[in-house]
Image 1 (cartoon, rainbow, N blue to C red):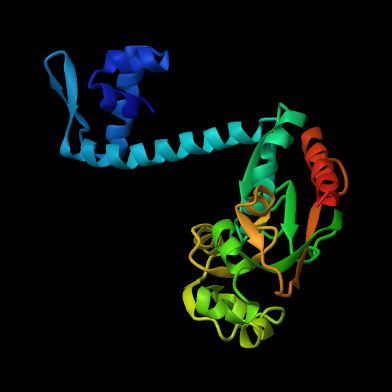
Image 2: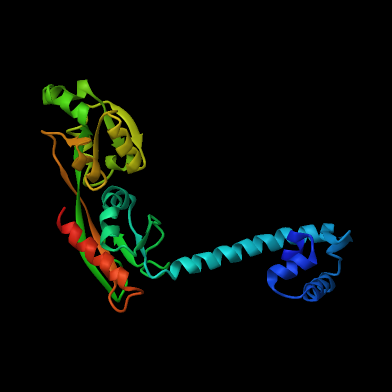
Length: 284
């Protein structure tokens, strides 16, 4: 750290002031480092110092290490925040259902600092500082409180203006009046594949997406009708920007589970958020 400060300031005295040590302490640290490396790291220039070639090489390595260390310390400080609650779950639930309700949650728990993650590699509570996990099945882990939470469904929707226009067209002529927005996995999923092979087979495919959020965006832009997760489209449906189309079936989707540690929790805020999520889901 003495070397890093001296290199940054180009002056042993200012480095000593920053680190609250004497100038001789900085000189001694640099001397020890030079003896270990076997090369001079600084040369004197006027009242200051400048790096040698060896010093410049070392500074780049040291700076990367210092930046990593400071970043780690910053993350530790964040995780020590008693209001922090880490929630890991699928994008369609966090983006479509939870995000629009965050203001209500924060109003109920003003000290809360939620961290929302869609990291699909996180599978165990506390493995990566996870407080609450949302998954499509119970986690294979002991010591958890887990419960079925939200039931999703696949619904056929259209942007409000397009939906209004389709009400004036016979159902049998919808395929000539608009096109179909598709999620790639819908063609092969057990719960949706038959819908695309049969009821929606006559529609021209406008665009195929591999991310449900892109599908939602396209539907909101009125580019066609879409078979979409009701939870992902929840806010748009409640606001009337998207409308469910009459005459089309809805299909049962995933059952989402919610989990947390059963015993002592990292902070009281975790239980407050878990209880709020549980109660809020009952109103869906």
